[in-house]
Image (cartoon, rainbow over all chains, first blue to last red; front, side):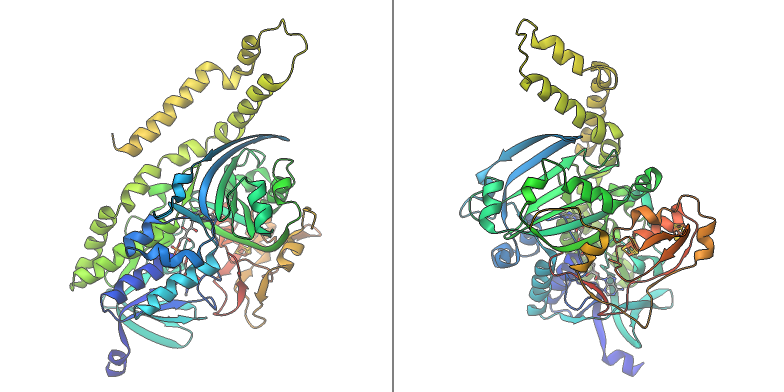
Length: 439
Length: 99
Ligand SMILES: Cc1cc2nc3c(=O)[nH]c(=O)nc-3n(C[C@H](O)[C@H](O)[C@H](O)COP(=O)(O)OP(=O)(O)OC[C@H]3O[C@@H](n4cnc5c(N)ncnc54)[C@H](O)[C@@H]3O)c2cc1C
Ligand code: SF4
Ligand code: SF4
Protein backbone atom coordinates (compact mmCIF):
# COMPACT_ATOMS: atom_id res chain seq x y z
CA UNK A 1 0.00 0.00 0.00
CA UNK A 2 2.83 2.41 0.92
CA UNK A 3 4.57 1.94 -2.35
CA UNK A 4 1.27 2.49 -4.09
CA UNK A 5 0.57 5.71 -2.20
CA UNK A 6 3.99 7.16 -2.99
CA UNK A 7 3.31 7.33 -6.70
CA UNK A 8 -0.36 8.02 -6.48
CA UNK A 9 -1.69 10.79 -8.71
CA UNK A 10 -4.77 12.93 -8.36
CA UNK A 11 -5.68 11.92 -11.91
CA UNK A 12 -4.37 9.63 -14.64
CA UNK A 13 -5.46 10.51 -18.15
CA UNK A 14 -5.36 7.87 -20.86
CA UNK A 15 -4.63 9.53 -24.20
CA UNK A 16 -3.04 12.90 -24.98
CA UNK A 17 -5.44 13.95 -27.75
CA UNK A 18 -7.39 17.20 -27.35
CA UNK A 19 -9.74 15.73 -24.72
CA UNK A 20 -6.91 14.36 -22.58
CA UNK A 21 -4.64 17.36 -22.98
CA UNK A 22 -7.41 19.87 -22.18
CA UNK A 23 -8.37 17.88 -19.09
CA UNK A 24 -4.73 17.71 -17.96
CA UNK A 25 -4.28 21.44 -18.61
CA UNK A 26 -7.23 22.44 -16.44
CA UNK A 27 -6.35 19.99 -13.66
CA UNK A 28 -2.69 21.00 -13.53
CA UNK A 29 -3.68 24.67 -13.52
CA UNK A 30 -5.67 23.94 -10.36
CA UNK A 31 -2.60 22.39 -8.77
CA UNK A 32 -3.55 18.74 -9.23
CA UNK A 33 -0.93 16.02 -9.77
CA UNK A 34 -1.75 14.75 -13.25
CA UNK A 35 -0.25 12.02 -15.40
CA UNK A 36 -1.09 11.76 -19.13
CA UNK A 37 -0.25 8.41 -20.73
CA UNK A 38 -0.04 8.34 -24.53
CA UNK A 39 0.69 5.29 -26.68
CA UNK A 40 2.24 7.26 -29.56
CA UNK A 41 5.86 8.43 -29.55
CA UNK A 42 4.62 12.00 -29.46
CA UNK A 43 1.07 13.26 -28.86
CA UNK A 44 -0.84 13.44 -32.13
CA UNK A 45 1.23 10.86 -33.99
CA UNK A 46 -1.69 8.38 -33.91
CA UNK A 47 -4.44 10.91 -34.52
CA UNK A 48 -6.33 11.95 -37.63
CA UNK A 49 -8.85 14.64 -38.30
CA UNK A 50 -10.43 16.18 -41.39
CA UNK A 51 -9.03 19.40 -40.72
CA UNK A 52 -10.86 22.25 -39.10
CA UNK A 53 -10.75 23.44 -35.53
CA UNK A 54 -13.19 25.90 -33.92
CA UNK A 55 -11.22 28.18 -31.62
CA UNK A 56 -13.98 29.03 -29.12
CA UNK A 57 -13.13 25.80 -27.29
CA UNK A 58 -9.53 26.89 -26.61
CA UNK A 59 -10.78 30.25 -25.42
CA UNK A 60 -13.13 28.51 -22.99
CA UNK A 61 -10.24 26.40 -21.74
CA UNK A 62 -8.16 29.53 -21.19
CA UNK A 63 -8.78 33.02 -22.42
CA UNK A 64 -6.15 34.02 -24.99
CA UNK A 65 -4.90 30.50 -25.64
CA UNK A 66 -5.67 30.67 -29.38
CA UNK A 67 -3.11 33.43 -29.87
CA UNK A 68 -0.46 31.09 -28.48
CA UNK A 69 -1.69 28.29 -30.76
CA UNK A 70 -1.10 30.18 -34.03
CA UNK A 71 2.12 28.32 -34.82
CA UNK A 72 0.42 24.98 -34.21
CA UNK A 73 -2.54 25.78 -36.47
CA UNK A 74 -2.65 26.03 -40.26
CA UNK A 75 -4.84 28.63 -42.03
CA UNK A 76 -7.66 30.88 -40.79
CA UNK A 77 -10.81 29.68 -42.53
CA UNK A 78 -12.45 32.50 -44.49
CA UNK A 79 -14.02 30.42 -47.26
CA UNK A 80 -16.75 27.85 -46.64
CA UNK A 81 -17.41 25.75 -49.71
CA UNK A 82 -20.00 23.13 -50.50
CA UNK A 83 -19.78 20.90 -53.53
CA UNK A 84 -22.33 18.60 -55.16
CA UNK A 85 -20.95 15.91 -57.43
CA UNK A 86 -22.97 13.93 -59.93
CA UNK A 87 -21.01 11.67 -62.25
CA UNK A 88 -18.42 13.92 -63.84
CA UNK A 89 -20.44 17.05 -63.18
CA UNK A 90 -20.04 19.34 -60.20
CA UNK A 91 -21.56 22.35 -58.56
CA UNK A 92 -19.64 24.42 -56.02
CA UNK A 93 -20.89 27.14 -53.72
CA UNK A 94 -18.27 29.36 -52.13
CA UNK A 95 -19.12 31.58 -49.19
CA UNK A 96 -16.29 33.99 -48.50
CA UNK A 97 -16.38 35.99 -45.29
CA UNK A 98 -13.27 37.96 -44.30
CA UNK A 99 -14.90 38.75 -40.93
CA UNK A 100 -14.19 35.14 -39.92
CA UNK A 101 -10.57 36.24 -39.64
CA UNK A 102 -10.86 39.96 -38.84
CA UNK A 103 -7.72 41.65 -37.44
CA UNK A 104 -7.85 42.02 -33.70
CA UNK A 105 -10.42 39.26 -33.17
CA UNK A 106 -9.88 35.57 -32.50
CA UNK A 107 -10.41 33.84 -35.86
CA UNK A 108 -13.47 31.60 -35.73
CA UNK A 109 -11.75 28.50 -37.06
CA UNK A 110 -8.46 27.26 -38.44
CA UNK A 111 -7.49 24.33 -40.59
CA UNK A 112 -5.39 21.96 -38.52
CA UNK A 113 -2.97 19.02 -38.66
CA UNK A 114 -3.04 16.87 -35.56
CA UNK A 115 0.59 15.86 -35.22
CA UNK A 116 1.46 19.53 -34.64
CA UNK A 117 -1.64 20.61 -32.76
CA UNK A 118 -1.85 17.76 -30.25
CA UNK A 119 1.84 18.03 -29.44
CA UNK A 120 1.38 21.74 -28.82
CA UNK A 121 -1.71 21.35 -26.60
CA UNK A 122 -0.20 18.63 -24.45
CA UNK A 123 2.94 20.81 -24.22
CA UNK A 124 0.74 23.56 -22.79
CA UNK A 125 -0.58 21.11 -20.20
CA UNK A 126 3.00 20.19 -19.30
CA UNK A 127 3.82 23.86 -18.84
CA UNK A 128 1.00 24.03 -16.30
CA UNK A 129 2.65 21.14 -14.46
CA UNK A 130 1.06 18.00 -15.90
CA UNK A 131 3.29 14.96 -16.46
CA UNK A 132 3.31 13.31 -19.89
CA UNK A 133 4.67 9.88 -20.74
CA UNK A 134 4.66 8.79 -24.37
CA UNK A 135 5.20 5.48 -26.11
CA UNK A 136 3.24 3.63 -23.42
CA UNK A 137 0.00 1.79 -24.09
CA UNK A 138 -2.38 1.40 -21.16
CA UNK A 139 -3.42 -2.26 -21.13
CA UNK A 140 -5.80 -2.63 -18.21
CA UNK A 141 -7.70 -0.74 -15.58
CA UNK A 142 -7.14 -1.66 -11.95
CA UNK A 143 -10.34 -2.16 -10.03
CA UNK A 144 -10.77 -2.30 -6.27
CA UNK A 145 -13.91 -2.33 -4.11
CA UNK A 146 -16.13 -1.54 -7.06
CA UNK A 147 -14.12 1.48 -8.19
CA UNK A 148 -11.30 2.11 -10.67
CA UNK A 149 -8.09 2.97 -8.81
CA UNK A 150 -5.40 2.92 -11.46
CA UNK A 151 -4.01 1.52 -14.69
CA UNK A 152 -1.67 -1.22 -15.80
CA UNK A 153 0.70 -0.38 -18.64
CA UNK A 154 3.38 -2.78 -19.76
CA UNK A 155 4.46 -4.35 -16.47
CA UNK A 156 3.83 -1.23 -14.41
CA UNK A 157 0.94 -0.25 -12.20
CA UNK A 158 0.02 3.36 -11.53
CA UNK A 159 -2.63 4.63 -9.15
CA UNK A 160 -4.85 7.70 -8.98
CA UNK A 161 -8.03 9.03 -7.39
CA UNK A 162 -9.58 9.11 -10.81
CA UNK A 163 -8.79 7.72 -14.26
CA UNK A 164 -10.02 9.68 -17.29
CA UNK A 165 -10.43 7.68 -20.49
CA UNK A 166 -9.68 10.10 -23.33
CA UNK A 167 -8.62 7.27 -25.60
CA UNK A 168 -10.59 8.22 -28.69
CA UNK A 169 -13.35 6.85 -30.91
CA UNK A 170 -12.41 3.21 -30.58
CA UNK A 171 -12.38 3.35 -26.78
CA UNK A 172 -11.11 0.04 -25.47
CA UNK A 173 -10.89 1.60 -21.99
CA UNK A 174 -14.61 2.39 -21.89
CA UNK A 175 -15.22 -1.26 -22.67
CA UNK A 176 -12.82 -2.46 -20.01
CA UNK A 177 -14.61 -0.25 -17.49
CA UNK A 178 -17.85 -1.93 -18.51
CA UNK A 179 -19.47 1.34 -19.59
CA UNK A 180 -19.76 0.44 -23.24
CA UNK A 181 -20.55 -2.92 -24.60
CA UNK A 182 -19.30 -2.36 -28.11
CA UNK A 183 -19.54 0.76 -30.21
CA UNK A 184 -22.18 0.16 -32.88
CA UNK A 185 -20.66 0.11 -36.34
CA UNK A 186 -23.65 2.02 -37.73
CA UNK A 187 -22.80 4.92 -35.40
CA UNK A 188 -19.33 5.33 -36.89
CA UNK A 189 -17.87 6.62 -40.11
CA UNK A 190 -14.56 5.34 -41.38
CA UNK A 191 -12.33 8.19 -42.52
CA UNK A 192 -9.43 7.92 -44.97
CA UNK A 193 -7.29 10.86 -45.97
CA UNK A 194 -4.37 11.82 -48.17
CA UNK A 195 -2.26 14.80 -47.21
CA UNK A 196 -0.98 16.30 -50.43
CA UNK A 197 1.90 18.80 -50.36
CA UNK A 198 1.64 21.91 -52.55
CA UNK A 199 3.31 25.33 -52.40
CA UNK A 200 1.42 27.98 -50.40
CA UNK A 201 1.02 30.23 -53.43
CA UNK A 202 -0.51 27.45 -55.52
CA UNK A 203 -3.05 26.72 -52.79
CA UNK A 204 -3.96 30.39 -52.47
CA UNK A 205 -4.34 30.78 -56.23
CA UNK A 206 -6.49 27.68 -56.66
CA UNK A 207 -8.88 28.49 -53.83
CA UNK A 208 -8.79 32.29 -54.35
CA UNK A 209 -7.40 32.93 -50.89
CA UNK A 210 -5.47 35.80 -49.37
CA UNK A 211 -2.10 34.83 -47.85
CA UNK A 212 -2.60 32.85 -44.64
CA UNK A 213 -6.31 32.37 -45.21
CA UNK A 214 -7.90 29.00 -45.82
CA UNK A 215 -10.86 27.15 -47.26
CA UNK A 216 -12.96 24.32 -45.94
CA UNK A 217 -14.77 22.36 -48.63
CA UNK A 218 -17.20 19.49 -48.19
CA UNK A 219 -18.59 17.55 -51.13
CA UNK A 220 -21.70 15.43 -51.35
CA UNK A 221 -22.45 12.84 -53.97
CA UNK A 222 -18.99 11.64 -54.94
CA UNK A 223 -19.04 8.22 -53.33
CA UNK A 224 -21.28 6.16 -55.61
CA UNK A 225 -24.25 6.37 -53.31
CA UNK A 226 -22.40 5.43 -50.13
CA UNK A 227 -23.49 7.52 -47.14
CA UNK A 228 -20.94 10.07 -46.13
CA UNK A 229 -18.96 12.86 -47.67
CA UNK A 230 -15.69 14.12 -49.04
CA UNK A 231 -13.62 16.88 -47.46
CA UNK A 232 -10.89 19.21 -48.60
CA UNK A 233 -9.07 21.50 -46.17
CA UNK A 234 -6.28 23.85 -47.17
CA UNK A 235 -3.28 23.80 -44.84
CA UNK A 236 -0.26 26.11 -45.02
CA UNK A 237 1.60 23.97 -47.56
CA UNK A 238 -0.62 20.97 -48.07
CA UNK A 239 -4.18 19.93 -48.73
CA UNK A 240 -6.03 17.45 -46.54
CA UNK A 241 -8.20 15.46 -48.93
CA UNK A 242 -10.32 12.64 -47.62
CA UNK A 243 -13.68 11.01 -47.13
CA UNK A 244 -15.82 9.73 -44.28
CA UNK A 245 -18.07 6.80 -45.18
CA UNK A 246 -20.50 4.46 -43.47
CA UNK A 247 -18.80 1.04 -43.14
CA UNK A 248 -22.03 -0.98 -43.24
CA UNK A 249 -22.97 0.48 -46.62
CA UNK A 250 -19.46 -0.04 -48.01
CA UNK A 251 -19.76 -3.69 -47.00
CA UNK A 252 -23.25 -4.03 -48.39
CA UNK A 253 -22.39 -2.44 -51.74
CA UNK A 254 -19.01 -4.16 -51.97
CA UNK A 255 -17.23 -0.85 -52.46
CA UNK A 256 -13.85 -0.29 -50.85
CA UNK A 257 -13.07 2.88 -48.94
CA UNK A 258 -9.64 3.06 -50.54
CA UNK A 259 -11.05 2.73 -54.08
CA UNK A 260 -13.73 5.33 -53.51
CA UNK A 261 -11.19 7.85 -52.23
CA UNK A 262 -9.10 7.27 -55.36
CA UNK A 263 -12.22 7.67 -57.55
CA UNK A 264 -13.02 11.03 -56.01
CA UNK A 265 -9.40 12.14 -56.29
CA UNK A 266 -9.63 11.64 -60.06
CA UNK A 267 -12.94 13.54 -60.39
CA UNK A 268 -12.58 16.31 -62.99
CA UNK A 269 -13.57 18.94 -60.42
CA UNK A 270 -11.26 17.67 -57.68
CA UNK A 271 -8.11 16.53 -59.45
CA UNK A 272 -7.15 20.01 -60.73
CA UNK A 273 -7.19 21.29 -57.15
CA UNK A 274 -4.58 18.72 -56.18
CA UNK A 275 -2.60 18.56 -59.44
CA UNK A 276 1.16 18.85 -59.12
CA UNK A 277 0.98 17.88 -55.46
CA UNK A 278 2.77 15.01 -53.75
CA UNK A 279 0.99 12.67 -51.38
CA UNK A 280 3.01 12.82 -48.18
CA UNK A 281 0.73 10.79 -45.94
CA UNK A 282 -2.17 8.36 -45.98
CA UNK A 283 -4.15 8.11 -42.76
CA UNK A 284 -7.35 6.57 -41.41
CA UNK A 285 -9.51 6.86 -38.32
CA UNK A 286 -13.02 6.24 -37.03
CA UNK A 287 -15.34 9.17 -36.43
CA UNK A 288 -18.47 8.97 -34.23
CA UNK A 289 -21.40 10.52 -36.07
CA UNK A 290 -24.66 9.52 -34.50
CA UNK A 291 -25.14 12.39 -32.07
CA UNK A 292 -26.54 11.34 -28.70
CA UNK A 293 -27.20 7.82 -29.96
CA UNK A 294 -23.44 7.20 -30.01
CA UNK A 295 -23.02 8.52 -26.47
CA UNK A 296 -22.94 5.71 -23.88
CA UNK A 297 -25.72 5.75 -21.34
CA UNK A 298 -23.25 6.20 -18.50
CA UNK A 299 -20.01 8.11 -18.90
CA UNK A 300 -18.65 7.41 -15.44
CA UNK A 301 -18.35 5.05 -12.55
CA UNK A 302 -16.52 5.56 -9.29
CA UNK A 303 -12.95 6.53 -10.09
CA UNK A 304 -13.51 6.67 -13.85
CA UNK A 305 -14.75 9.18 -16.46
CA UNK A 306 -14.91 9.17 -20.25
CA UNK A 307 -14.34 12.28 -22.40
CA UNK A 308 -14.01 13.27 -26.06
CA UNK A 309 -14.53 10.75 -28.86
CA UNK A 310 -14.42 7.94 -26.28
CA UNK A 311 -17.71 9.35 -25.01
CA UNK A 312 -19.05 9.75 -28.55
CA UNK A 313 -18.76 13.54 -28.52
CA UNK A 314 -18.38 14.32 -32.22
CA UNK A 315 -20.93 15.50 -34.73
CA UNK A 316 -21.18 15.43 -38.48
CA UNK A 317 -23.52 18.19 -39.53
CA UNK A 318 -23.09 17.65 -43.26
CA UNK A 319 -21.65 21.11 -43.83
CA UNK A 320 -19.10 20.76 -41.07
CA UNK A 321 -17.59 18.11 -38.80
CA UNK A 322 -16.96 18.91 -35.14
CA UNK A 323 -15.15 16.83 -32.59
CA UNK A 324 -11.93 18.56 -31.56
CA UNK A 325 -13.83 21.42 -29.93
CA UNK A 326 -16.18 19.02 -28.13
CA UNK A 327 -13.20 16.94 -27.02
CA UNK A 328 -11.62 20.03 -25.43
CA UNK A 329 -14.88 21.08 -23.77
CA UNK A 330 -15.60 17.62 -22.37
CA UNK A 331 -11.99 17.38 -21.12
CA UNK A 332 -12.54 20.70 -19.39
CA UNK A 333 -15.89 19.52 -17.99
CA UNK A 334 -14.20 16.43 -16.57
CA UNK A 335 -11.47 18.56 -14.96
CA UNK A 336 -14.02 20.98 -13.47
CA UNK A 337 -15.92 18.05 -11.98
CA UNK A 338 -12.78 16.52 -10.49
CA UNK A 339 -11.69 19.87 -9.04
CA UNK A 340 -15.04 20.82 -7.57
CA UNK A 341 -15.78 17.76 -5.46
CA UNK A 342 -13.72 15.59 -3.18
CA UNK A 343 -16.36 12.87 -2.92
CA UNK A 344 -15.44 10.28 -5.59
CA UNK A 345 -19.04 9.07 -5.92
CA UNK A 346 -20.19 12.60 -6.79
CA UNK A 347 -17.75 13.36 -9.60
CA UNK A 348 -19.92 11.71 -12.25
CA UNK A 349 -22.98 13.78 -11.45
CA UNK A 350 -20.98 17.02 -11.47
CA UNK A 351 -19.44 15.96 -14.79
CA UNK A 352 -22.92 15.69 -16.29
CA UNK A 353 -23.79 19.16 -15.00
CA UNK A 354 -20.56 20.53 -16.43
CA UNK A 355 -21.22 18.98 -19.83
CA UNK A 356 -24.53 20.82 -19.78
CA UNK A 357 -23.02 24.07 -18.58
CA UNK A 358 -20.30 24.05 -21.26
CA UNK A 359 -22.78 23.28 -24.03
CA UNK A 360 -21.57 19.80 -24.95
CA UNK A 361 -24.94 18.14 -24.36
CA UNK A 362 -26.65 20.80 -26.38
CA UNK A 363 -24.33 20.37 -29.35
CA UNK A 364 -24.92 16.61 -29.22
CA UNK A 365 -28.66 17.03 -28.95
CA UNK A 366 -28.71 19.37 -31.93
CA UNK A 367 -26.79 16.85 -33.93
CA UNK A 368 -28.75 13.81 -32.86
CA UNK A 369 -31.06 13.82 -35.79
CA UNK A 370 -28.62 14.99 -38.45
CA UNK A 371 -27.85 11.42 -39.47
CA UNK A 372 -31.55 11.09 -40.34
CA UNK A 373 -30.93 13.68 -43.03
CA UNK A 374 -27.39 12.68 -43.97
CA UNK A 375 -28.02 8.99 -44.04
CA UNK A 376 -30.99 9.48 -46.31
CA UNK A 377 -29.76 8.43 -49.77
CA UNK A 378 -31.71 11.34 -51.27
CA UNK A 379 -29.25 13.80 -49.72
CA UNK A 380 -26.06 12.32 -51.14
CA UNK A 381 -27.42 10.89 -54.38
CA UNK A 382 -30.62 12.51 -55.59
CA UNK A 383 -30.11 16.14 -54.60
CA UNK A 384 -26.59 16.46 -55.98
CA UNK A 385 -28.02 15.19 -59.29
CA UNK A 386 -30.97 17.58 -59.15
CA UNK A 387 -28.70 20.55 -58.41
CA UNK A 388 -26.47 19.65 -61.34
CA UNK A 389 -29.49 19.10 -63.62
CA UNK A 390 -30.86 22.53 -62.82
CA UNK A 391 -27.56 24.25 -63.52
CA UNK A 392 -27.11 22.26 -66.70
CA UNK A 393 -30.53 23.45 -67.88
CA UNK A 394 -29.84 27.06 -67.01
CA UNK A 395 -26.39 27.23 -68.55
CA UNK A 396 -26.82 24.94 -71.54
CA UNK A 397 -27.29 27.29 -74.47
CA UNK A 398 -30.31 26.18 -76.46
CA UNK A 399 -30.04 27.47 -80.07
CA UNK A 400 -33.82 27.23 -80.27
CA UNK A 401 -34.56 30.30 -78.17
CA UNK A 402 -38.30 29.86 -78.68
CA UNK A 403 -38.32 27.15 -76.03
CA UNK A 404 -38.83 28.85 -72.68
CA UNK A 405 -36.67 27.90 -69.70
CA UNK A 406 -39.41 27.23 -67.20
CA UNK A 407 -40.83 24.01 -68.64
CA UNK A 408 -37.30 22.67 -69.01
CA UNK A 409 -36.56 23.43 -65.37
CA UNK A 410 -39.85 21.89 -64.40
CA UNK A 411 -38.80 18.76 -66.23
CA UNK A 412 -35.82 18.41 -63.85
CA UNK A 413 -38.25 18.34 -60.95
CA UNK A 414 -40.15 15.12 -61.35
CA UNK A 415 -40.43 11.65 -59.87
CA UNK A 416 -37.95 11.28 -57.01
CA UNK A 417 -37.37 14.99 -57.06
CA UNK A 418 -40.96 16.05 -57.73
CA UNK A 419 -42.39 18.99 -55.83
CA UNK A 420 -44.20 16.64 -53.45
CA UNK A 421 -41.07 14.68 -52.60
CA UNK A 422 -39.01 17.83 -52.14
CA UNK A 423 -41.64 19.33 -49.87
CA UNK A 424 -41.59 16.19 -47.76
CA UNK A 425 -37.81 16.43 -47.42
CA UNK A 426 -37.94 20.13 -46.57
CA UNK A 427 -40.48 19.35 -43.83
CA UNK A 428 -38.24 16.60 -42.51
CA UNK A 429 -35.18 18.85 -42.47
CA UNK A 430 -37.21 21.54 -40.74
CA UNK A 431 -38.34 19.03 -38.11
CA UNK A 432 -34.76 17.97 -37.46
CA UNK A 433 -33.48 21.54 -37.22
CA UNK A 434 -36.40 22.53 -34.98
CA UNK A 435 -35.81 19.63 -32.66
CA UNK A 436 -32.17 20.75 -32.50
CA UNK A 437 -33.40 24.17 -31.40
CA UNK A 438 -35.27 22.51 -28.62
CA UNK A 439 -38.44 24.23 -29.85
CA UNK B 1 3.84 15.32 -59.48
CA UNK B 2 0.87 14.42 -61.53
CA UNK B 3 -2.10 13.29 -59.45
CA UNK B 4 -2.80 9.63 -60.15
CA UNK B 5 -4.75 6.82 -58.56
CA UNK B 6 -2.53 5.15 -56.01
CA UNK B 7 -2.76 1.60 -54.73
CA UNK B 8 -3.02 1.03 -50.99
CA UNK B 9 0.57 -0.29 -51.06
CA UNK B 10 1.82 2.90 -52.71
CA UNK B 11 -0.06 5.06 -50.23
CA UNK B 12 1.19 3.09 -47.23
CA UNK B 13 4.68 3.39 -48.69
CA UNK B 14 4.77 7.10 -47.84
CA UNK B 15 3.78 6.49 -44.20
CA UNK B 16 6.17 5.98 -41.33
CA UNK B 17 5.83 2.61 -39.58
CA UNK B 18 7.67 0.84 -36.82
CA UNK B 19 6.43 -2.71 -37.31
CA UNK B 20 6.27 -4.85 -34.17
CA UNK B 21 7.83 -8.07 -35.44
CA UNK B 22 7.42 -9.66 -32.01
CA UNK B 23 3.68 -9.28 -31.56
CA UNK B 24 0.72 -9.06 -33.94
CA UNK B 25 -1.80 -6.57 -32.57
CA UNK B 26 -4.60 -8.08 -34.67
CA UNK B 27 -5.08 -11.81 -35.06
CA UNK B 28 -7.58 -13.27 -37.54
CA UNK B 29 -8.82 -16.84 -37.29
CA UNK B 30 -9.25 -17.59 -40.94
CA UNK B 31 -11.48 -20.66 -40.28
CA UNK B 32 -14.29 -18.27 -39.32
CA UNK B 33 -13.85 -16.44 -42.60
CA UNK B 34 -14.81 -19.48 -44.66
CA UNK B 35 -18.33 -19.13 -43.28
CA UNK B 36 -18.46 -15.36 -43.66
CA UNK B 37 -20.43 -14.64 -46.81
CA UNK B 38 -20.19 -10.82 -47.00
CA UNK B 39 -16.56 -10.42 -45.89
CA UNK B 40 -16.98 -6.74 -44.89
CA UNK B 41 -13.29 -6.48 -43.96
CA UNK B 42 -12.41 -6.54 -47.68
CA UNK B 43 -14.18 -3.21 -48.19
CA UNK B 44 -13.96 -1.26 -44.96
CA UNK B 45 -10.21 -1.49 -44.31
CA UNK B 46 -8.58 1.71 -45.64
CA UNK B 47 -5.19 -0.03 -45.69
CA UNK B 48 -6.49 -3.13 -47.48
CA UNK B 49 -4.88 -5.41 -44.94
CA UNK B 50 -7.55 -8.00 -45.75
CA UNK B 51 -7.29 -9.70 -49.12
CA UNK B 52 -8.65 -12.72 -50.95
CA UNK B 53 -5.91 -15.11 -52.08
CA UNK B 54 -7.16 -18.09 -54.10
CA UNK B 55 -10.62 -17.45 -52.74
CA UNK B 56 -9.41 -17.54 -49.13
CA UNK B 57 -9.13 -14.64 -46.75
CA UNK B 58 -5.59 -13.52 -45.98
CA UNK B 59 -4.68 -10.91 -43.37
CA UNK B 60 -1.46 -9.05 -42.68
CA UNK B 61 -1.20 -6.52 -39.85
CA UNK B 62 1.71 -4.76 -41.53
CA UNK B 63 0.35 -1.50 -42.95
CA UNK B 64 -2.54 -1.34 -40.46
CA UNK B 65 -3.49 2.27 -39.75
CA UNK B 66 -5.05 1.32 -36.38
CA UNK B 67 -8.45 2.80 -37.18
CA UNK B 68 -10.42 0.00 -35.51
CA UNK B 69 -13.04 -0.33 -38.24
CA UNK B 70 -12.40 -4.05 -38.77
CA UNK B 71 -12.83 -4.71 -35.06
CA UNK B 72 -16.40 -3.40 -35.19
CA UNK B 73 -17.31 -4.52 -38.71
CA UNK B 74 -16.09 -8.09 -38.35
CA UNK B 75 -17.97 -8.68 -35.10
CA UNK B 76 -21.14 -6.91 -36.07
CA UNK B 77 -21.37 -7.56 -39.80
CA UNK B 78 -19.00 -10.49 -40.31
CA UNK B 79 -18.33 -13.77 -38.56
CA UNK B 80 -15.96 -12.82 -35.71
CA UNK B 81 -12.80 -13.90 -37.51
CA UNK B 82 -10.97 -11.01 -35.85
CA UNK B 83 -10.08 -12.91 -32.70
CA UNK B 84 -7.74 -10.34 -31.16
CA UNK B 85 -7.74 -6.62 -31.72
CA UNK B 86 -5.58 -4.28 -29.65
CA UNK B 87 -3.52 -1.23 -30.43
CA UNK B 88 0.14 -2.06 -31.11
CA UNK B 89 2.43 -1.96 -28.08
CA UNK B 90 3.70 1.53 -27.23
CA UNK B 91 6.00 3.12 -29.88
CA UNK B 92 5.06 0.49 -32.50
CA UNK B 93 2.76 0.88 -35.49
CA UNK B 94 2.06 3.93 -37.62
CA UNK B 95 3.41 7.41 -36.79
CA UNK B 96 1.64 10.28 -38.47
CA UNK B 97 3.66 13.38 -39.24
CA UNK B 98 0.58 15.32 -40.42
CA UNK B 99 -2.56 13.63 -39.10
C1 LIG C 1 -11.75 11.77 -41.03
C2 LIG C 1 -12.14 12.62 -39.87
C3 LIG C 1 -12.44 13.97 -40.06
C4 LIG C 1 -12.75 14.78 -38.97
N1 LIG C 1 -12.91 16.12 -39.19
C5 LIG C 1 -13.03 16.94 -38.13
C6 LIG C 1 -12.98 18.36 -38.29
O1 LIG C 1 -12.77 18.86 -39.40
N2 LIG C 1 -13.15 19.14 -37.20
C7 LIG C 1 -13.33 18.61 -35.94
O2 LIG C 1 -13.46 19.38 -34.97
N3 LIG C 1 -13.35 17.27 -35.76
C8 LIG C 1 -13.20 16.43 -36.80
N4 LIG C 1 -13.16 15.08 -36.60
C9 LIG C 1 -13.34 14.56 -35.23
C10 LIG C 1 -12.10 14.79 -34.36
O3 LIG C 1 -10.95 14.39 -35.04
C11 LIG C 1 -12.22 13.99 -33.06
O4 LIG C 1 -13.48 14.26 -32.48
C12 LIG C 1 -11.12 14.34 -32.05
O5 LIG C 1 -9.89 13.92 -32.54
C13 LIG C 1 -11.38 13.67 -30.71
O6 LIG C 1 -10.34 13.93 -29.80
P1 LIG C 1 -10.07 12.96 -28.58
O7 LIG C 1 -9.02 13.61 -27.75
O8 LIG C 1 -11.33 12.58 -27.93
O9 LIG C 1 -9.54 11.61 -29.23
P2 LIG C 1 -8.22 11.33 -30.09
O10 LIG C 1 -7.79 12.54 -30.79
O11 LIG C 1 -8.48 10.12 -30.87
O12 LIG C 1 -7.13 11.01 -28.97
C14 LIG C 1 -7.10 9.80 -28.28
C15 LIG C 1 -5.68 9.58 -27.80
O13 LIG C 1 -5.61 8.45 -26.94
C16 LIG C 1 -4.46 7.68 -27.27
N5 LIG C 1 -4.72 6.31 -26.80
C17 LIG C 1 -5.73 5.47 -27.20
N6 LIG C 1 -5.69 4.31 -26.52
C18 LIG C 1 -4.64 4.42 -25.67
C19 LIG C 1 -4.09 3.53 -24.70
N7 LIG C 1 -4.61 2.32 -24.48
N8 LIG C 1 -3.00 3.93 -24.01
C20 LIG C 1 -2.46 5.16 -24.23
N9 LIG C 1 -2.94 6.04 -25.12
C21 LIG C 1 -4.02 5.67 -25.84
C22 LIG C 1 -4.36 7.84 -28.77
O14 LIG C 1 -3.07 7.54 -29.25
C23 LIG C 1 -4.72 9.31 -28.95
O15 LIG C 1 -3.63 10.16 -28.84
C24 LIG C 1 -12.85 14.23 -37.68
C25 LIG C 1 -12.59 12.87 -37.48
C26 LIG C 1 -12.21 12.07 -38.55
C27 LIG C 1 -11.88 10.64 -38.31
S1 SF4 D 1 -15.33 -9.94 -41.65
FE1 SF4 D 1 -14.27 -11.14 -40.10
S2 SF4 D 1 -15.07 -13.20 -40.32
FE2 SF4 D 1 -15.63 -12.08 -42.18
S3 SF4 D 1 -13.97 -12.53 -43.59
FE3 SF4 D 1 -13.43 -10.64 -42.56
S4 SF4 D 1 -12.17 -11.25 -40.81
FE4 SF4 D 1 -13.23 -13.10 -41.57
S1 SF4 E 1 -7.61 -1.38 -37.81
FE1 SF4 E 1 -8.22 -0.28 -39.67
S2 SF4 E 1 -6.38 -0.25 -40.93
FE2 SF4 E 1 -6.03 -1.78 -39.34
S3 SF4 E 1 -6.64 -3.70 -40.29
FE3 SF4 E 1 -8.44 -2.92 -39.19
S4 SF4 E 1 -9.59 -1.73 -40.68
FE4 SF4 E 1 -7.54 -2.07 -41.52
